[in-house]
Length: 191
Image (tube, rainbow, N blue to C red; front, top):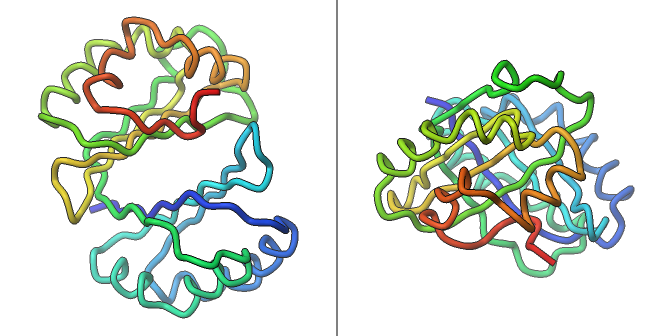
């Protein structure tokens, strides 16, 4: 089972926080984490979205209680710990093979955390839209179901370029009808 922890928060001094994070990385495998990915907002360089991948549910609980997690928030200057999404992967699509253009060296992530009525319906809608998603620049697509609320999902979409991501956020086409079904809460939020 592939699990993820995710949080969206601000860091007043990104370089200080990053140095602290790098210093704590060797401790992550001992807590059950196999990767960490940090994204910075396109519009606000102090806003970050962090995902931590873990293989089992037990390590999720250990990570949530770990002093490492609290030290990251402390070093970021966070006064109140932000909401954390903990979920399991239910869909993982690699759409790069579907697109004509090669995968860009750097990519942009568009994320949404929202309630969803029927997960199976959402998955069917995504599969029906694969070709149009790829044409719009979506390279990878993940759906995670929350561990604590089976009706809540996090959708991550890797998009090839910043321009395509901005266009996707501002003007999703009919291929993105599943986002309306999933609810609101895009990250970064539309301007």
